[in-house]
Length: 128
Image (tube, rainbow, N blue to C red; front, side):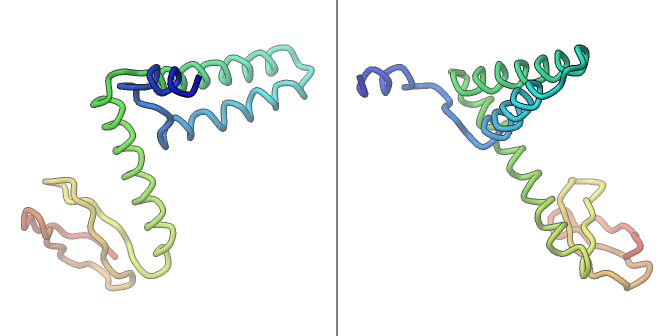
């Protein structure tokens, strides 16, 4: 039986970070929908839950690995930046280069400063 499951998942995406991040809130919405008596709220929660479950399982069983891995990479990079911004929120500010879209960290409280991108060497002014 284990070999059949392994053969079925060969060449498929599987459960990655993004599919889990969609699956768990969908299950919570499904559970929350059971506690509401209002028809429109209950059915809208069920609809969102089922949509999340369908999309999550679509990602898990997908054979288009390149697309699913790129989606997962973008998701993980976004949350990595958000985690860094939250951790450093009192001492640093994060800006994106207008030319190459690279993230840069500058210290807070320096006033108006000129930032030079380390990748493309583009210069721009921001208030820290």
